[in-house]
Image (cartoon, rainbow over all chains, first blue to last red; front, side, top):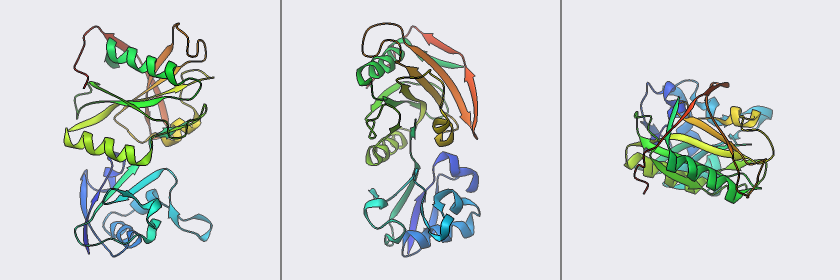
Length: 94
Length: 145
């Protein structure tokens, strides 16, 4: 499944400055693994893999076709050909 | 240095006073690469908290899509502190994810919702490093749509 992945400014150091890169996979998890293959280091910025579990980082938002994946199955969210995946860091603080 | 027009400066402070004792937050968007904060966009603090702020995730997406369509970027990201000084907290520093933005902090601890001067300061936050910068208020009203 070919998708488009939109990359936020702060992660464009991994994509040679590209705002959007092609992605592949049937789930968000697979898309991120594919992304890591092309742009090593980026996965660690998206996923918290500590304690043997693996989940999106709390302050990273990912959307598939404008839906926040936290409400659609997280990393297991399925993606289809032509879908758009958007990554946006939370704007948050104390 | 942050250069910001008087109307936008006043709008940030008014928002902070209005939302006190909760933290207020928002951005001022401007043409990408221009460093000109032109379009004031107050956001809802989804955390509705006196000690934390976070843009609602779907409103965040809408905002970034809108900026993208207009070829804008968040020139200013602002929020208020309601009990402490206008200096980035550890959380602010850890979560700062816009290396090109001026992070504006406002403190409403002195006067809360009431009239009175408000501290407004600006910072760059890059890779965990905070650098304060001067704020220059320019007396020029730009379009605010």
